[in-house]
Amino acid sequence: MSEKGLLPLTLVAQPDARWELVQRVADSDYFRKGPKLRAFLLYVCENTILGRAENVREQLIGSKVFGRLADYDFNNDNIVRVEARELRKRLETYFANEGKDEAVVIEIPKGAYVPIFRPREEAAAQPAGPEPEEPAEAAVTPVLTTRRASRWLAPIVAMGLLAWAAATVWLATENRRLRQMPNPSSADAGASLQEYSIYPELLGTLGKLPNREPQLVLCNPKVMLLFGSETANPYVGPPGILMVPPKDLERTLSFAFNGWDRDMPYHFLRVTRDEYTGMGEAMAALQLARLMDALHRPVHPTQARFLNWDNVQEQDLILLGGPSSNDWTYQVDAAADFDISGLDVVNLRPLAGEPKQYTPDAAPRSRGELVEYGILKMLTTRHGFKTFLLAGLSGAGTAGVADFFATPAKMKPLAERIAAAVPGKPFPADWEVIIRIVVKDGLPLESSAVTIRPVPLAARQ
Image (tube, rainbow, N blue to C red; front, side):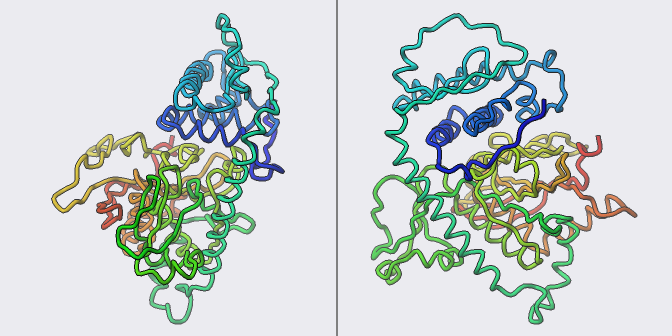
């Protein structure tokens, strides 16, 4: 049985409060550090909410979430059954602790994989029974819903719409501004043409094919507050991150100022501690959008939460940010040599003289500088689409990786090394690089390539 397609959650007529609940659970400490278990939760809940419970079968979960072949033998490979037990335990732990005030709880019934969204009082009244044997292929379980959830639907929907509107205005404004910028093909930028000539080979078909405009995927952006102050140390209320916005970003967001704020001597950007797009990812998006526009390869900015399992696998993507900030970083459907695990960049197939992992500085240096690492990956998925990943271990690291790629003087030697690895052959479609970034005060100061895989070993196997 093949999997039925999905509609993106953003096309559903009305935002679903159950999906908002799923996002809170997935972003909690119980799931954030377990990317595969988090992906398991998101997959089964998304399909269930969209009315595709028939997609929530063991073989499809094994293929879509855990990277098994589409026809793998789930009778001999019990990865889904094992992880389902852990998923149930973590859901119970979340709703007993961090989520103790949630009006609705998520349950994965024992012996099945389709989640149930149940009012807390109803869940508490359910008698505990013996755990049944996990089936080799779990049956589809109907989803129970109730009107009790409606009491918290309205405020969640309102918040979601505000967030979506703010992000959309910002992205639309930035798109218009970028299209008005001069590019290297203009007469006054003729000297830049030679520098930019390396990028067509590095990017391959990304952004070049008709009707395949890449999605520039940001990490779950919501609302960021830009405001003015009479003092250099304003009081901003609840805890959050307060920073002075870079001039480019301040000009881009200037429409958000009212007259009073614009005339103040100090301007600030405030971000809450939730999973908002950080300054690093915003800077990376700005650099990538400028570069792609200059190369006449248009991209479409979007949010990670606006994608689903189907459309991620069947379009070209530019992913910004590591797995802690972008839901889809771990879902690259292609063989790779380098990966991010926790606080390290891991070399999955080290060659002679290469370390197995790259660990950032534990403490700042004398000038307050830190060293961290990031990844550039250009990969082809098994469906023939391109995925370009630019990810650091932090937002500043991601900005450093994007700055490295967008600087022709840094990328030209890399492009030459990649081409030299396949003499007499076309430029490789897939390549990977580990980047070393020096960071100070949350900003990248310098970056350099430390390990290069002109053609990933995994792709040769």
